[in-house]
Image 1 (tube, rainbow over the protein chains, first blue to last red):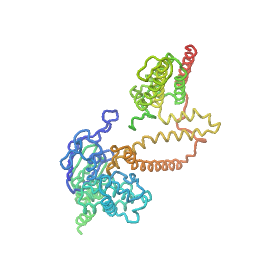
Image 2 (cartoon, each protein chain N blue to C red):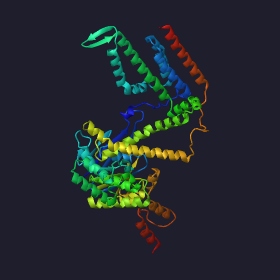
Image 3 (cartoon, helix red, strand yellow):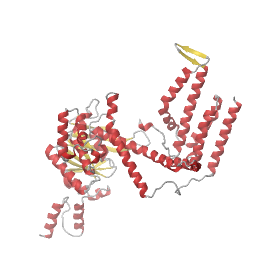
Length: 282
Length: 267
C-alpha cells in the first residue's frame, strides 16, 4: 500500500486572524513495509501531517494519494481507509471508554462492519500482539496501569489490521522499560504482519535504533528525508532545529574533537564500541 | 458549532472600556439591562440605543463580534417574536386564515425583539471587554458585602473562574477524542437520531474521565500551594478605582436618570 503526499499545504483557521500554516508544500512517498521515523520539534507539523494520511484533516491545497486514489475525492471510502491506515494518537489511553478491555478493542473492527466472530478473533489477536495477558481481558480499562492502558489502546487500532500503522509519540510518559518493551513489540508486529510503520518521535535514540528511514520536519516543511546514517550527518543543522543527534553519535563527535581519529558516522552503541576498539588498536 | 458560542469570550484591545474596573462594568450591565425593562414606550429605547452605540464605539470591538453572539439566540428571538405577534389579544389590524395580528401584538413583539437584542449585545460588550479573571475578581469584590450574611463569595467566584477557564480546554479535548475515535472508524455524523446519540458514548465517556482527572490534578496543585479558601487571601493585582471609573459611574447615573425621567414623562 503506497501513500503519496503531493504538494500538500495545510493552514489552521484559514481566513481568520488566527490563521497559521502548519504544513507547507509537503512531498512524500511512503512505500510498502518501511519503518519511518518522523521527527521534529514541537509545533513542526508532525502530528498535523500524520492526521492528513488517514483523512482526519483535509488539506488546504495539494493532496494525499493512497494506492493511486485521491483520498480527498467525494465518495472516497474514508472509513475503509482508516482501517487500512491505523493512527494511534498521542496518549491513546485517553480514548478508552468501554466497560472492559476486550470490548474496547472490539470497537475498531466492529466499526469496519466485520462479523461478531471476526471482530472477536481480531481483538484477541491484537491483545496478544501487544502482550496483554488473558486475565486482564474482562477488567475495566480504567483499572489498568499506565503502560497497560497504552498497550490496550494500541491494540484497539491494531485490531483493524492496518497495512500502515502510524504512532504519534507512543512512548511519551512511559518509563524506560515500558518504552523498550513497546518499541520491541512494534518491531515484532512489523515482522509478523509486514505492515508499514510510521513512528512520530522526539527521541533520536529511538528512531536511530528502529527506523530505516528518517523524515525530519521543521516549521511545516520537510528538512531531511533519508536513512538515519545520512540524516545524522547533519549534526549542526539538526541542533539549530532544536533536535540534535543520538547521544552516542554526539559522543563520537566529542571524541573526534578531543583528538581521537574515530568515524562520526555512527548511530548505535554496538558499532560505536567496535569503532572505538579499532581506533584504540585492541 | 461549539465554537460559535461567544459566552465568556474575550476580545483583546486597548480601550477605555477594557481598562474600566470590572465592578463599573458589572453595575453598568445591570443598570443597562434594568433600563430595558423600565421603559414602556418606543422612545424610551432611543437613549438605550445611543448608550449602546457609544459603548460599542468606545470599546473598539468590531461590531461583527457582537452579532456573532446573536446567532446562538436567533431561534429564541424569532420564536418569541412570532408567538407574541400572533397570540396577543387586542385590536385586529390584519387577518389571514385563522391568524390574527393585533396592534398590541405588534407592539409586544417589537418590544421583545428590541429587548432581547439589546440584552445580548449589552452583556456581550461586558464579556468581550473583560477577561474572565477580571470579571470574577469584580464579582468577588463587588458582592463582598454578602459575606456578612455568610455567602461564600470567594468560593463562588473561584468556581466560576475555574469553570470559565476549563471551557476552551474541554473543547480542545473533545476535538482530540473525536479525532482519535474517528481513527478507529467511529462515525459521528450519519445515521438516525438513535444511532447518533449512541455514537456519542465513545466521546462522552473519555471526556468525563478526563474532566475528572483534570479537576483532581488541579485540586492537588492548589493544595500543594496551600490554597485554603478566601480567608485572609491577598491579591497580586488588587482592584483599585481610578478617575475613569468615577467618570464611568457618573455616566451610568446620568443614563439611569434619563431613563427614569423618560418613564415618568412618557406615560
